[in-house]
Image (cartoon, rainbow, N blue to C red; front, side, top):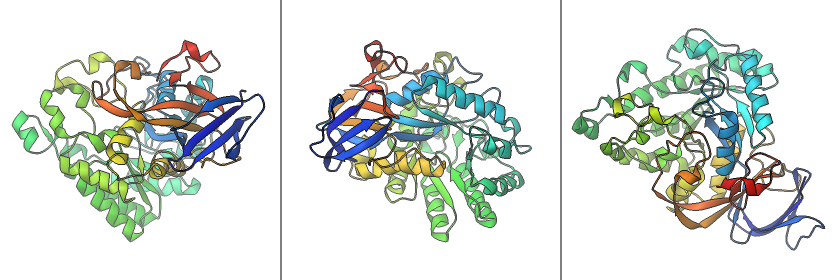
Amino acid sequence: MTDYLIRGAKLNGRHAADLIVADGRIAEVGTGLSRAGARIVDADGLIALPGLVDLHTHLREPGYEASETILTGSRAAAAGGYTTVFAMPNTSPVADTAGVVEQELALGEAAGFVHVQPIGAVTVGQKGERLAELGAMASSRARVRVFSDDGFCVFDPLIMRRALEYVKAFDGVVAQHAQDPRLTEGAQMNEGAVSAELGLAGWPAVAEESIIARDVLLAEHVGSRLHVCHLSTAGSVDIIRWAKKRGVNVTAEVTPHHLLLSEELVRGYDARFKVNPPLRRDEDVQAVREGLADGTIDIVATDHAPHPDESKSCEWQAAANGMVGLESALRVVHQAMVETGMLTWDDVARVMSAAPARIGRLSGAGTPLEAGAPASLTLYDPAPVRTFARGDLHGRSVNSPYLGRDLPGEVRWTLFRGAATVEDAVVAATMGAPVGTGVRA
């Protein structure tokens, strides 16, 4: 394995330092360092962050490989500065048994670009009728600690209560897709003045907020951990803020697209902007930004959701929900939160690396850049501003809402356990292959 001497990187955007990477770990951090035979990386002006961790990724394999595979999704993640992704269970077969989550883990290990940590389904087949094999998945080689029926709400309160009670035995967490299905039947976009003007069925904020309110009370009642996926409304932020003040053990995530984009983009009927939960009002965008800034919202998670062209290149009503987001997430957070002064780079390291690893109970990920830590890190150049284009995408699907939009920054290097998955803004085609055979990040 190649040793690296990274010179002059700003650790979490603060003071400049050198890092020596050897044998998959950070061997030394300081100034004026040297190491015989190490490859020198000039990181002057670059920000060094712990490798990013995404708690909410859809990799589609097994079953939906036309949209994404664990290999292609892993390359997309590396391009965006990620070294760990948690894979949602809405595959075919559903990841509701120890066998399926162990298969996903093995496919991630074979790909080698990031650590792929499976998320187990809460209920069998994500049907919401009976609990899946939570204990078996937890004790499997995959050591699952996050369980979700994402894409579907665990709507039955008794099932949700039992799940919260069950995961306490191994310090697991239930990650809820907060959507009342009865209140969103046929919904096409956020409910409000714009949906009325466009004649599209509305998706009310209360459909999200009512489930969150119920679930924080259930989590309080049983004394368990609850995580709220892709929070999107001002009312949801208020509920989480209230619950935390009350002492409820709840965490929440926001997506990059809900930090930057609003329902106004739906006016063009471009299905790239169709997502679940939907893009909300400008007031909601501001509220989730403030919630992330003040710590009410714990993390940024991509909800990377690839779809083939035919699922998006169609009329709005028939289009699938979802956006790809791994390659763009850090750049969007830079624009929405750092350039606006709402987060520092220290904060970015917390919400995009340390906190998601902690919520997922994954040791060895999201660790500070210090001697002895695993050498999973990202070198990010905050200076350039480039138009996001298809060449920036490295998965099988191109349903990005940012195509044609100017975004700041560029991931220059990603190291995963000491191996370069992105080298000078070029993504390796395969791990161990000459970097020149890759494509630009």
